[in-house]
Length: 92
Image (cartoon, one colour):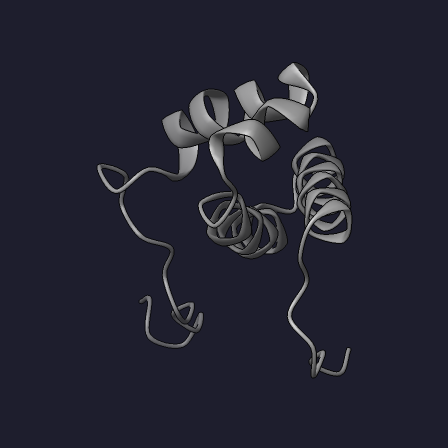
């Protein structure tokens, strides 16, 4: 997708945060952890730009998943994903 030229604000920003959280949850349900991690990081970055009043407009289910449940699996205390797999020829 092309980057937007005008940054989101107000209702559009809230809708985009909700959309990204839902996309991340769908990747989570599909066991696609790499895609889930990327969407979650983008959603969290946008979520952190919201004011307290705007954060309260995000449904609680989505806020809980973003801040707590997914932190258990994607937090800084976890081992980062590997960048490349070893080939079978190296394992002898």
